Image (cartoon, rainbow, N blue to C red; front, side, top):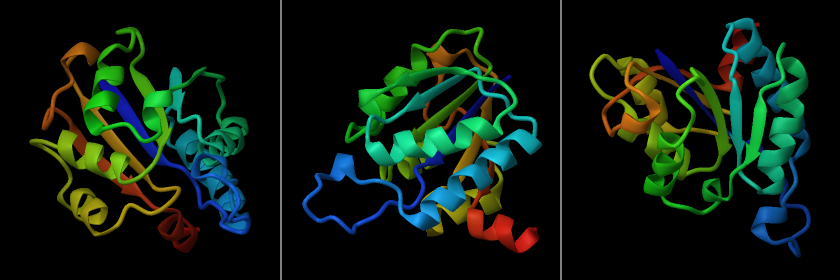
Length: 174
């Protein structure tokens, strides 16, 4: 079984309006949320062997705060296709992953991640998780998809969306 973890970058700051979009850093709220989601990933035993990260500063900072919370150090790849590219470009990137990687974490942006999660969600998906993403896929949210095919055959509607985790809901449960 393969597992794909789609993590939207944590909340970014808008204090410096002179920065280009890809240069925006995390806001204080984002710097708190990212390690919280990292701890949740670790507690649930999801151990990504590879992490694909957008080159945008806010995505890189999100990864830098998630990483120390994980028990293992996965391979990390800055992936330009995760910033501003189409859902199809991201899907092509995923289809080229090594087959020995059973779990991959992708850190990127909306609307791309929301669209990808909903497009991959097929038979057996959790109805509540689908509804949560359709309603809103906020910053630092995590979508978990599982499928039995090889990466090269990952297809639209070819995975099960098993869970959507939002930091606010985790904080309420704590």
